[in-house]
Length: 167
Image 1 (cartoon, one colour):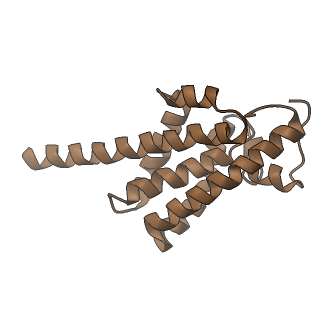
Image 2 (tube, rainbow, N blue to C red):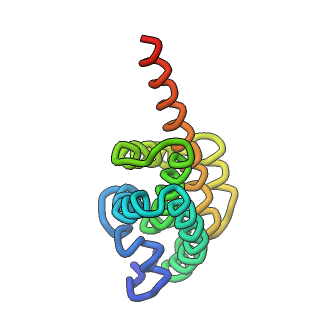
């Protein structure tokens, strides 16, 4: 990266999720954490539908913002770009909310599982991240991590329910 783009540029402001991507260490975790208050407000006011809608909008805006950040910085998929983490968190929680009631436990569990899958990038997340160029590539791997995180969360809750009922 040649320069640290200014937050005065709308693409940079959004790509860094209002500056959270400039925090160190672990900007991806900071970006996801910075999305938690918005997620909580939507969980309690608009439920899964609101989270999924915001996740989709954030995903689309993120493509534009990531492309803008990359253009200004001269890099690609810089660690400072964390709008993908915000979109991933919203999608994770929205998907979980389709099957389970949303509460603080879901907020915490969804956060942790999303970060786990975003960091580990199991198949095909890593392959998609490497194969898809530009802002779309920046965003796609986090959407896939959201699907993994939501699926694992829901299956784990079901297994725990089955185990506790049969015990």
